[in-house]
Image (cartoon, rainbow, N blue to C red; front, side, top):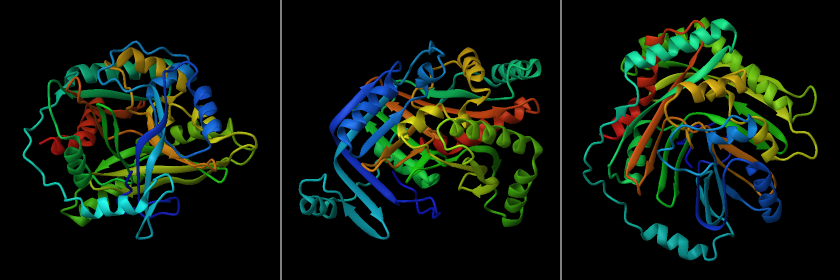
Length: 395
């Protein structure tokens, strides 16, 4: 996990490496949260892993019937054999590692792997532009009928029978789009190459913090004046602000289910943050976790995250299942960790490549928030904008 030097009052570590699944638990949706809670209560240790989007079968009682092309389990967590942190300019090695001195020597003596030439990967859209626009128009009809207010609609770009160097590809992606919640995550033959700018949930000494993203504008780094105007237009956009506030209300509702009454508040509304590829509108919501509840309860209460579903959550999850073409899997889930003391931090899995080295299938999903005011053609272009760094990283 690498925050690429983004400083902020909510950042703990610059980089974390967790390796070796000394103890682990692999779960499918059904009773996953309860079983994970029992595993954590037994271990009382650092856990690293992921929650897949299809845990919505458990939290929202909406079955997943779409084809699964990459094969990530719904939930996987492990106690690491080796645990390294970079913070304050220092490399810290946890007592999990039996021989810190040997690890230091191995790290220092390891030659930097040179990039080798890899054949470019051509991504194929799961739906063409006209089909995408038709589906967005159908979703707007649902909004007009009052079925929902806002829905995050995703499409897949994929490639079959491809061989990539996952680490090298991740390094290219992170170099093109260095974002604060980036993760390289390997589970046997499964690889997630994630350049996420979004935090799903942080638990810090009983304080919950969620930072949903809704609102995207392109960058023009070659012209500072135009770039500033693009950011200014994003802040002023009534369409983007309406999307953002709807998700903020949803997050407030989710947090209120596990927080002390009256403690949920919006720390920042409509904040504009600039990343290498795009400007983003980010809001920050926080609350105080009720006594007797743990980080897993907070994750369960807010899952799947509102920024990747919409409102009302159960209905839009049903519509996502109806209109999307492939199972999301780990995409729009969360990767992160918890500590022995009960703190935790999880990202939102977006701007990511999912690669199954066994089946040689590579997948990238991108989406945008659809409201009544959405222009389907613009939403399609926004999806391409979000996929641009991935397309470039793949050559």
